[in-house]
Structures are given as C-alpha cells and as structure tokens.
Length: 406
Image (cartoon, rainbow, N blue to C red):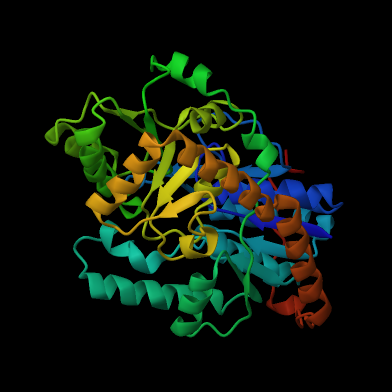
C-alpha cells in the first residue's frame, strides 16, 4: 500500500503525536508499505527519516511551539500527489491538517483515516479562559464529533476515548489501536552518563516525569506531591523533562514553594540517547496527567527498567496494570507520595516492580501495532466504494512547488 500522512505537528516538535507518526511509519515501511508525510517546516533544522514534504508555516503567538501550515502550498502539491497514486490519506491532527487532508482525499478519490490523539474536552477551557468551562467542553464535543464523522474511519488509542467519542455521537467506525514502542531502543540507557552530564551524584534519588509542560499534564500536582517526599527524603531530586506553555507558571510554583534546588527543569531531551539515559538514571518515574489518550512515556519508562508511580485517568487506564511495572495511585498528594517513598526506601521492591515492567511492556510491540494498522487499511480499501468524482466540480489543477518529498 501507499499511504500519505498529514499532520500539523512533527519533529523537531516533540510530543506524542510526532512519536506516534514516526513509530507507525517506520514499522509500516518495514512491512513493505510506502509512507509519505506532509508536515510543517520549523525554524529548527531536522533531518527527516521519513519521506516528507515540509510546508512553509506561520508562527502562532498563542502557542509558540506549534506552526500553521500555508494551505495554498499543500494544495499546490495536488498534481504531484496524483502521480504518486496513494491508496489512502491518514490524518493525524484536527487543525489545518484535517481540512487539507479531506480536501486532498476528495480530489484524489481515496479514503481517509484519522487518529484522535488529543482529548480536547478535558483541557480546551484551560486555553480559552474567557469561555466558561461548560461552553468550552460543549465546543470540544461538537468539534470532535463533526471532524470524526467527516472521515471514513477513526483510530483511537484506548477504550475510554472510544467510549467518549461514541457518546458524542460519532457514527463512523472507531478502532482501538495504541501506538506501540520498540523496547530495545530504551534498553541502552546509561544512567550514570546522564547524572554526570547534569552534575547529579550517583546516590541521589531521582524522580522523573517526561512530557509537554502543559496545564493538562497536571505537573503542578507532582510538584506539590514531591514536597511531601522531601519531608522523608530531603536528598531527593525531581527532574522535569519537557517544555511547553505552562513552563512560566510551573517555574513560579517551584519558586514559591522553595523547591528550586530540588527540582530540575531540563527541557526537551534528544530522544536517541539523552532521553534514554535520563529514563535509566531515574529511580521512580511519576505521572499524573488527566487527559492522556494513551501515555507513551509510561511504556518508555518501563522499557528502560524504571519503576512507575502514576494516576490512571482516561487512556492511561488501558496502559497500566497495578503491579505490572507500575503502582497506581489516586490524585492525592499524601497517598501518591507514600507509594513513591515506599519504592525509594525498598530497593528490592523497586527492582522487582521494574523487572515486571520489562516483561509487561513487551506486549506493546510497535511491529504488532503497525500490523494491525495495515489490516485496518486493507479492510477500509476493500469495503469502501470509490466516490463519484465529477471533473466538472473539481478546481483547476494547480502547479506544484516541490516535485517530491525530501
């Protein structure tokens, strides 16, 4: 099969969507399929491992990490995309890419798949503070329902997300298909190398959380919880690896609580080695997001041999099993801190939990998940009746600005 992906975000922008795209694309290529991507160009340089059309993009003042692609440049690729003879378009994000993906699919006469990566209902109100929370949630439901019903089939990372979309009134097929990981990629971390790079003593207990520093990630809870850990283990260190719009607020919180020496903000880490070393350096990985559709970082931490303590909200419920590499805790600072301290104080319990995590994470293999996605594609192509494309209703052919992905 020949598959065209389109997304509003991709590397060097680091988040779960970028990771999911790269993971699935590489595994699909290993299975013998051809995968191309349309994504924004970023100011930072990045060497694409996937054949990619990089589209000029604009800065977004309210979300400086992300970019808005120039739609005309995507549409100008239409003649070249026709020559590529794609079987389907897989839309990865709900913004410009969603509408451009539908536009291209109608003109290419191919079906559309969309992955619902982000549960907007739980955090849209955080970014629209002037809009009452109930109105923001209603808008998120309408937005999600209308977009999902516009494509041929929808991929969701977990059962709770499928249930939520069905309750919204999404009528199109909803297939649960989480992003897999390659555990061997996270088995090569050298914790001492990370500690040496950041001037952290070998005996210092490290708590780690990884991800976008955004309000919906609930990192402020982890900071408050960590203050209780410090009562019993004043030598502990909390490392937060990531960047995002909540960073200034988080920095103020850390300062106001007097935790500047004990909390280290290390920003985004290069994924091939620095992040893997960081996972390996940690004694306990902590997580408390309320809006995850899956929570890949939890699997990555377990694949690196690090014990996890986490809440289990939304999609995380489908990922974590209590005792299988992770301890599940409520969003209660005292209870959560007690579980963390129990692992810090009992090295045998921590190592046993981590070993169970290594065995558990093997079930989430990226090749297996990609195989399931390829089966979904084939089923869609078999069942779908090609649309009646009337050439009189299509716009004149536009000239392509680039001849091939790079």
